[in-house]
Image (cartoon, rainbow, N blue to C red; front, side, top):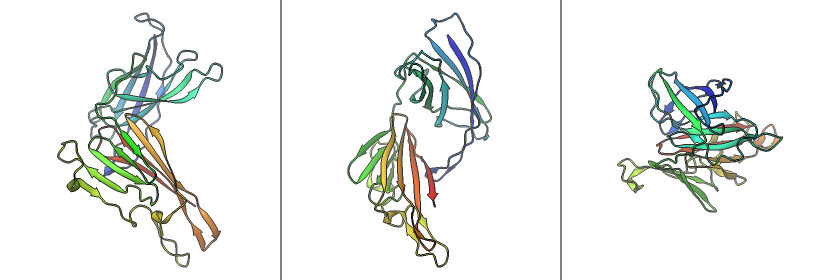
Length: 262
């Protein structure tokens, strides 16, 4: 048996619909120790999740990097959090034999205020969420549903969240009265240059967008949108941007990472 222990901590900050990203504290992995209770092929990595914002967390999305021994696992097929829904991605493989070296696991732990919660990462199979993230895509938009939330990302006039519905009565449908954001050309990114440097710039005016589904999974999905900076002179240029929108299974919020590029 391989047994590791990893400590994960985070701070929580939610404002309105958008989840403002809070950095994870460093992850500390301790040496693996051998045991005799299981066969050598069984993996058991202990994860200790610490809540340090004194607000508590109920099924709050986090991500953890797990190191794996060389030569043991060729795929993520049976890897996951024991007894809880999770999603596992490959980050790195061992150069010598292409087996998994580091994986990234997404799950939603529950922790009391200033408390600790223990979870286990193993190779006994993975649990899917009751309400997975789903995505549909066409030439003009990407539509995402998380269960309580449905939103649309436009490919032609990017305004971060083009349309949003929140299933407030919990009946599993997104009714017209539950739409909380409607499409508008002045939604999304607006850049106001300094005096003499041109008019306000709206992300929705960009026609050179690159929009892609960067990650598609049952626990988490990520949409990436970017537009390049166009520089002519110091008074004639269009600022670029790169944005990522994160959606989580069963959650009524998203996380948005928006980077203005000069």
